[in-house]
Length: 121
Image 1 (cartoon, one colour):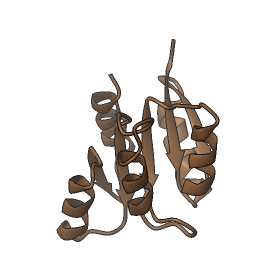
Image 2 (cartoon, rainbow, N blue to C red):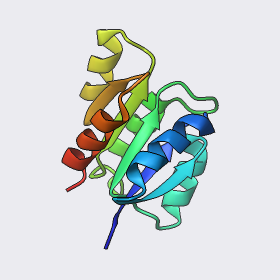
Image 3 (cartoon, rainbow, N blue to C red):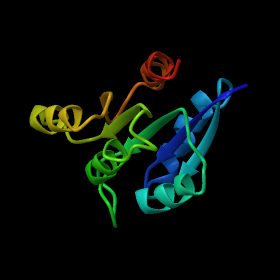
């Protein structure tokens, strides 16, 4: 059975690029914000991995990571954060909060594919 990846990004054009690269190997689900993603997950949908943007309206990627890592139902799911935020302090903070990986936008889709493959075994 194919592993599933949840993409959470308020920019559908970014999600489309990721989906093109991952859809041959994974079942890919897209949500445009963390609030919808949490609602979907609370309905019993548990992805094998999550790719989340950092800067989103309603709830930030950082708040999303903290929520998931603080929840026993979801804290086992590996999270890769995508962001145009280049400061190492942001990356360090997110990794400390539980994100498994961090990629700076613009990203190489092949690098993203390899990193996801390593996270979702």
